[in-house]
Image (tube, rainbow, N blue to C red; front, side):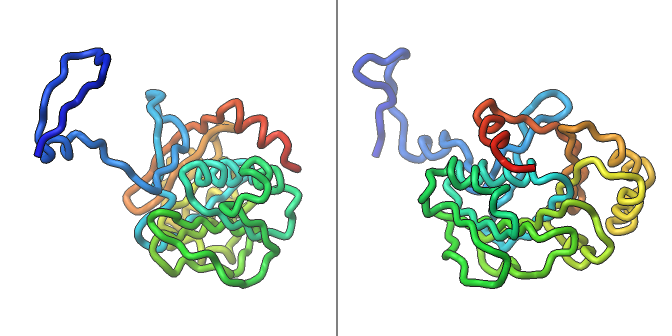
Length: 230
């Protein structure tokens, strides 16, 4: 079997290829990849927020980044459940997704049944429950990720944070940077870097991963996030 690439008014000569060759031309797609920011050379960097395996994510810093990740996850077609005791800070995210959109659910803190997660509709649970979170929605099925949004790094969060698949760290004061160094066995220069990040700086930390990056926020995201309460 073969297919012809081109059209009624092709901009290049038409040619025929086999189905096998056509398969090799398909670009690889990471179903759960979310663009997070830019690297040292302004190259776009994405993180696998949603994966075939249950995934634990920890974010230490402001809610701005957590909201931005939620917006981008929705844009990939993921279902996002936000568990929080401060719903006003998240309502603009729900509104931006279409108000009654079934892909975004806002609920109070407390255990409860979650939507089914699948490759077609992966699930991101955002737990906004303070610096010492309870394990309300542990990732337990393929294509489900739980993101713990921590406003600060607290010693009692170690049980959740230290074994996370991916940790996103924004600028930390010196005492919290020292705690991070203890939790993840970071050498001195890495610990110091955490205290000197800019307002848009993030460190992505994981197994064999230390990736400094710079957040990039689109004008539309800026408009949406500006409506969120502090």
